[in-house]
Image (cartoon, rainbow, N blue to C red):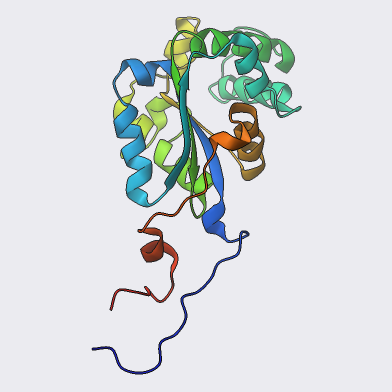
Length: 214
């Protein structure tokens, strides 16, 4: 029997970190590898909540818009690709112009992402963007840590994808920042396709007093 006065359960406002959301896309290779359930399991096990999900075959226009929601994406992506080569003492095989490099990168991404069905998801929970990125692993599977989705299930690399003139196959897209996540969720989901609902385990994750156990 519990003695003493009962303290009220803490009420969280909408700006609490537990309401943070992020976008995840299981790419065509993830679907073909039969990894939908495994990917979902990884995010669910840590305590994130799935609040939106749908399967589709995206159009080229949808994919191009996705990658260019950030007006600086073309420049940043080109510079990142060029730097990856110069760090290894190599000359970029396409160009030293970041925009020319990104044009090739984007073409490969569109070809990759429109090859078959994808599963788009919205995940919610404390620090959702950072947690999902941590569980997913680095962009290049070869250098992703063991224990991450990409590190455990993919053997691709930048060098191999470049040699094959294709995008690197890394199973999953995950938003890189809260702003990016908000923009991407709006791009992929209508307002009525993302749901607000309660999970019982949220009381264990977020109620600082673990209220209701006794």
